[in-house]
Length: 255
Image (cartoon, rainbow, N blue to C red):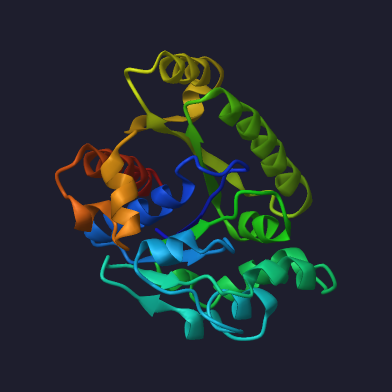
């Protein structure tokens, strides 16, 4: 199985990058070949696994603009998966892409040379709606939407689902919603429980069974430049992302 998945949210702080990092690590642990691509100018995935953002055309900036091959931007890391790190110039890419032809297809074209080399390619999108996010969705087979169990996250979820439909209609008719992942769930918090129930009522078949709990070890791991599996293999955050990876791996047997 070869699958390209965009990990996307139009709201920041919902566990999007944490999900991209730890899903990549868990899939790699399961002996899958994984590539994670940091498309966010904040470079949180890059720094979250202990890599410094790169300068100039190196990193994801070059392939996104068609200035270099994606093979030349790939680096390995101790978490066991390959990475295309964010570039410091990435914020300017969305401005530069506006003026070029086939601007929505640049990332898909770049990935064509490595797509078959990886079982899973994860695209960590910026928390916004711009041409870089559109590139990710055009390149992807499906989208994972991490959603924090709080009220304002629901609004962002509805907006992102609308964006997915727009991309399906105009650029990538084969794009699918892989699923909605509930994150930062606190069983002691009434609002968390209520939002989770609302999500289940409205999106039941699109929700993953796994719920990612609020867990300080997840935040600590990224601050130390490690996946949670490397940082604390026995914490509840690790167990949750193992279970989530298991759900994704089940898709292999269904295809």
